Image 1 (tube, rainbow, N blue to C red):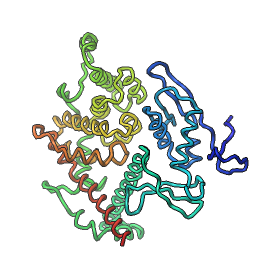
Image 2: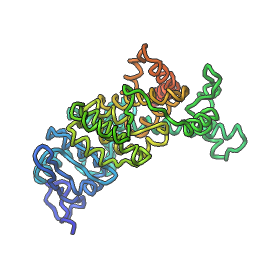
Image 3: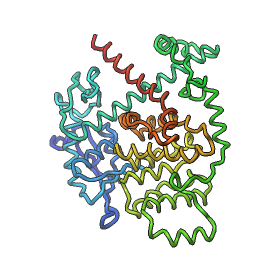
Image 4: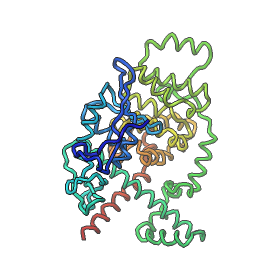
Length: 421
């Protein structure tokens, strides 16, 4: 039975007040250092407030100074430590005051917006009155929400641009609908020259998904390739013989938790025959058991062991797990890229062309909000390791994606200029 609804504004005592929500319900799990608080009905509360539940969870984390974990698929919202529901309800009042209520009419019918000219200014647009007012900065959540909205906008811009390109190609091939013709025409002026570009080998732009015959050919080749055992310094290879298992058992006490994680996932991959069959929760439990949560090398190891030569199709199926382990931490997002580069090093030994897929992989990380644009540009700025051929080829393979990312940013700036005129 659902608890009796309360006023969103708890300071407003009126039984006929129409803006209601469920009171927060919590559940304490675990003990000792592993104790955690589950926000049982956060989805319901977030729906009433018209906010993403992860934003509310982040607010609690910032206020309390505790790490949060979002299991969106199973609707489990976790805060490390034991926290009473009454305390969190009081904190929620503060969230509502700062990030929900319109400062003019005091109603909670607001949505987040970025300023049309200054994309770093967060505003509350009220649907109950005509006012749109800036959110007062100063809270850590402010930057988190701004970053989330910026990335959402850039993602939408990139997807729209990709759709226009596909529509233009369909028009060129004589298969476009009238709607396709209209969309393609809107983009012809500024993109016409780019789609004709080829790289130094004469290959078409590999960022045109499914339309690029060279990329389709490469994907088919990748799907057929059988990866040879790489060097121990690149990825974990598993000897499944009785002697190998006994040797690992004898040596395991002397290796790091990161290596233990790598060995364990590799053995699971070998036993199940497919990296995607390794249960995500069991991986998280193993990380917790080894005491290596939130470590750069932990995430790096995951990137090297969760995927194989089929990484392009595997990433979308591992998004939830990846988001949980990086939880919007720039260093951990960088670890994803570093680990992926090392994975490519192992695969490249049997498929010299594999690094051409690096741009596609980075694009998937970006579109699925695993790695932010800022981290991608930071990685690109640092450049490749001059002593590593894999690193150089991995960076080269990402150039076209980086160009697309830069164009999307430039188009956003042009739109801002148009608005100001």
